[in-house]
Amino acid sequence: MLPKEYRLKSRSAFKATYKVKNSFHKGGITMFVGILKKEDVPTKAGFVVSKKVHKRAVKRNRLKRLMRESYRLMLKNNSLGNSQKCLSLIFVGSEKALNKSFDEINSVMKKLVGGVDV
Image (tube, rainbow, N blue to C red; front, side, top):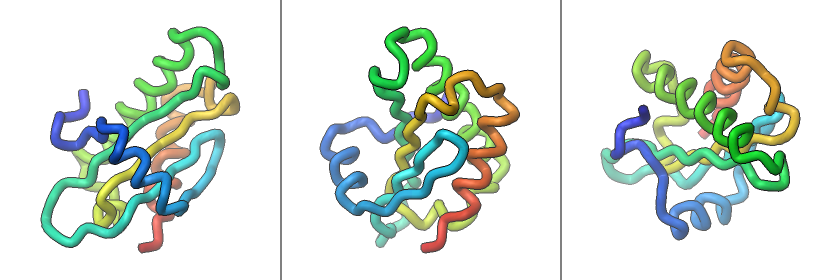
């Protein structure tokens, strides 16, 4: 499970991140990047899969779990690179990513996080 200090939870934080309009898309996952950090606080991450993607909550939650676990492993291995300079990240899953395995999701997430140019 992702530690509490790394979770993006409030509605206002999500809105502020979306407002920056800085996004990257790869393999069915879109990553929205927030503003740069000024002080030394941890980067917070949010995970979203809309009801429009699939009507079954089980499918949506599975995709969110896979994305969250992939991010947690990258955080543990300190392989987040330049994305650590951002205040917040939001990962949005789409229909393309629903039936992918963990290895496929993990490789897409690594490409997204590694491709952040701040």
